[in-house]
Every structure is written in structure tokens, then in C-alpha cells.
Length: 133
Image (cartoon, rainbow, N blue to C red; front, side):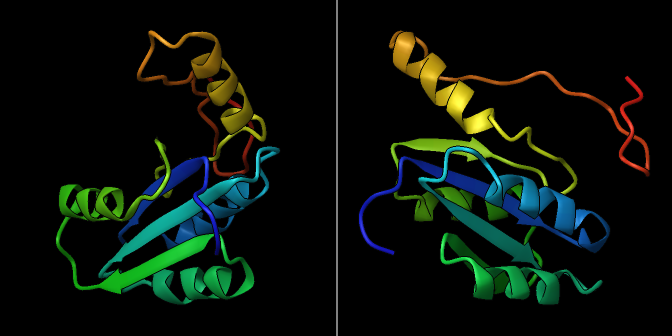
């Protein structure tokens, strides 16, 4: 990958195989594509590593680190230390990002230079992906 991406997306995974496909796909399918996706497989034992490796082999924006379990904080700090972009976006392995998340957040930050951190609203979904709250 050449150049500096606009956003570094950081995610730690520990035994998240059940949720990984929709979570990772929701990042890879963002309408804003200038990002790197740093994923730390924190010693998963449920097949997460193989799923993540498959994604990484298909998309050069993914930077996958696979290692023994050290915990969420250590994993996120490791990912942040590897980040190359001026903006860092946080993603959980059991979340699904809306397709315009990055576009909306970048536009907001550009329009409000006094703001340093943004978040977002959530929808709770059931096991079938239907919004419940």
C-alpha cells in the first residue's frame, strides 16, 4: 500500500468468528475507501484467525496481526501504534458500521476543526440483523 491513508481503522478480535463477516464487510464496503484496516487477532481459538486471514488476502487495506492473547487494551494500543493516518476510527468485531460512517465523520470533522473526537448513534439488532432498538 502506498501513500498515507486518511483513516486508520483499528479493531481487536478475540473469538469473534460468529460476527466477523458482517463486521469486516461493513468496513470494507464503506463509501469512503481511503483507509487502512488494522486488525489484531488477539489469540483467538474459534476460527477467527482463518476468517481474518482470508479477508486480508483479498483486500490490501487490511493489516492483520496475529499473536497470543494479551487483552483488548494491549491489542488496541498495538493497533494504534501501527496506525499511519491522521485519524483513527475504532471498530468492534461484533459491530456493523453504516456504509457512510466514514464520509459523515470526516465531513463533520472538516466542518468543525475545533472538534477532535466524534462518535455515533447505534441500533441494536437481533441475531437475524433486524433492528430491535
